[in-house]
Length: 365
Image 1 (cartoon, rainbow, N blue to C red):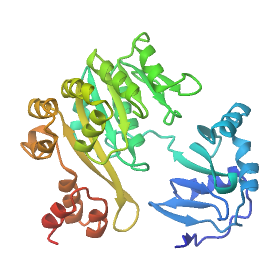
Image 2: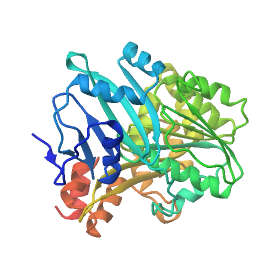
Image 3: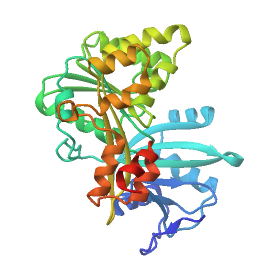
Image 4: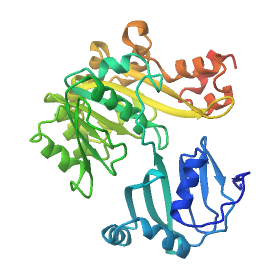
């Protein structure tokens, strides 16, 4: 199926600055350069082709190599992919990924990183978010698929700390996305591959860097997850991300990362250290734009016991109890709210739902 073509005057020039300016100008989130296709941008979650010539691998390489260093070029050619972030004056800040496709042709994906860091109030986040960031220690996870706004939510949480608390915050990312100006807090931003060798290595040495809060851009492997749990257990507030779609799936993913003999120990650590799981998805709004549906699980005595006993199938029902006081909400409840307020269409809510049968019953289908 072919993508739509942007119904605007054609972009005559074909260089990276011009293409990335178009991402900003059209309010898009992403730019894709793939051989045998014209450049495409993503607007409100949908790909739209720019009115430009079809690209080949040689043209993509010619344009894209202007944005990276010789060291990054070498890494790309050896590893067949590279992540980086770049600021282009008078255009914006972008996260980039270069990779190879069939016939060894270079392709590229860029995502815009807003330069203005949103507040929790800007995002209309629930009040419980301002409460959980006041914890002295624990693990707060923001989860969801690529493009679900995890980085934006994390940046808003840290921005709230920056506005209200005197803390040392270390961020470890690949690459660094939002750059925070020091207000009340002090930020140490670290880029994996440039400022540190790995997430796990950065976490190991962070203990000697006197942090109050640590942000881990992605909890990718067993070593990183274990180091994050240890940091959360030893008096630090740790923020991290996972590519999971619900609170229960997130807990399962963490425990399943470890071997059978280690799983009980990890469940024990998680039952104590886990503070909250925010699982989110973006979906189209009626009238244009997108909105976020967030499932929120706040760890308490009952949920901690279920995690420790690995009775995770009971966590979902526990999340539904006493919500006025706990601040918890399931994804189904949030989607029901968005549908009944006519913010999103029923079919869009069902498309992203992790519990479609339950949602059908609640919205009368």
